[in-house]
Length: 124
Image 1 (cartoon, rainbow, N blue to C red):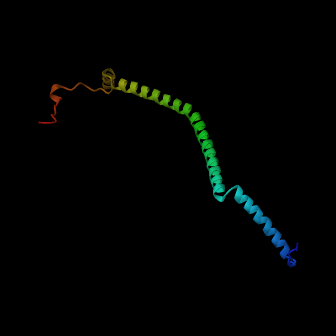
Image 2 (image 1 turned 180 degrees about the horizontal axis):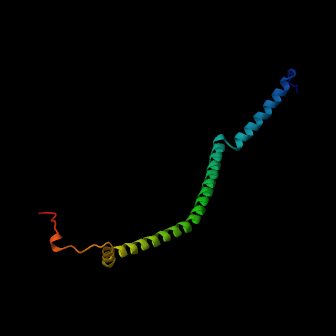
C-alpha cells in the first residue's frame, strides 16, 4: 500500500496540533461523562447542603442561648410576682379602715358634722 504523504510541519505548528488533539479528547471524554447541566445541578445541590448546614448550626446556637436565658428569665418573673404580691398587700393595708382612722387621728382630723356632708347627684 502506498503511504500518504504528510506535509512537513512548521516549527511551532506541530505542538499546537498535538495540544489541540489532547484537549479535544479530554473535552469529549468529559462531555460523555457529565454534561454542564449536571455539573451545575451538582453545584447547586452542594450550595444548598452547605446553606442548610449553616442554618442548622445557627439554629443550634440560638436554641442553646435560649436554654441559658430561660432560668434567668424565670427567676426575674418569680421576683416580679413576689413584688406584685408585696405591693398588693401593702395597698390593702393602706386602704384598710383601721389604718385610715389611725392616719386621721395622727393628722388631728375630725369626723364631719351632718351639716357639712353634701350629696351630689350625677344625673338628674
